Image 1 (cartoon, rainbow, N blue to C red):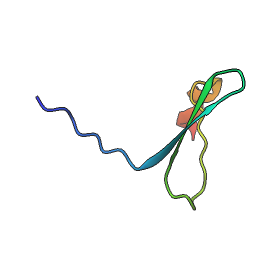
Image 2 (tube, rainbow, N blue to C red):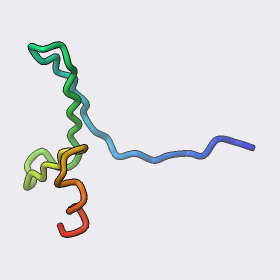
Image 3 (cartoon, rainbow, N blue to C red):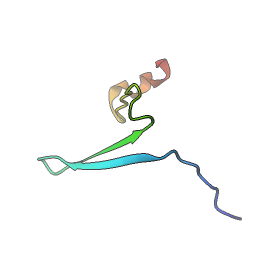
Image 4 (spheres, one colour):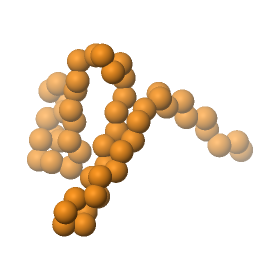
Length: 52
């Protein structure tokens, strides 16, 4: 069986090392001139994503 083809939109990924040694990963999708939308994965707010 062939592996599924996943069509992912073009995006940029960044990894930033914090002063305490953790790594913060950031990804950007969409029109650079468009309206920004910020989603923070793993916060208590994550359960409210359906309300957007």
